[in-house]
Image (cartoon, rainbow, N blue to C red):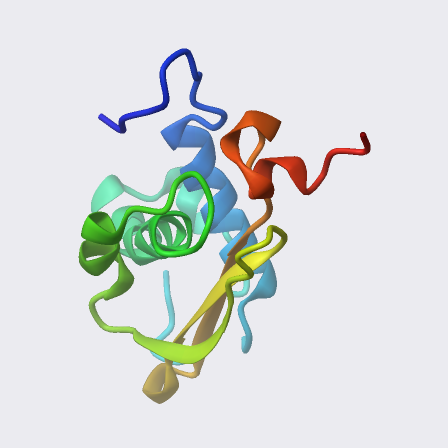
Length: 141
């Protein structure tokens, strides 16, 4: 499991993170069963499709979401894990990214030009002020 600072509780469960990743990626992905080109017009297939159809759709998005946490500044950054998660099979990582050291929105961009698909995967600041500058960024104190 993920190591945390003493006394810290994980702010987001892996299941919730996966759901948020899938919904976020779908909501901000560009262009229009999974078609060969573009994105499905609906996520209804996830509800009733067998796991072997749903997992290939969700796996790259979950991997991208992991990458935005372990590859960008903040309490979750982990260089040794970054190399594993940054490269998502079948996707190119675009050089465009947002990764401010002083807190705020972090984002990575992934593309499949031949299939006209793209994903902007993003995260905000850390949830706990004691986790450093990123955790204090949303504090009103």
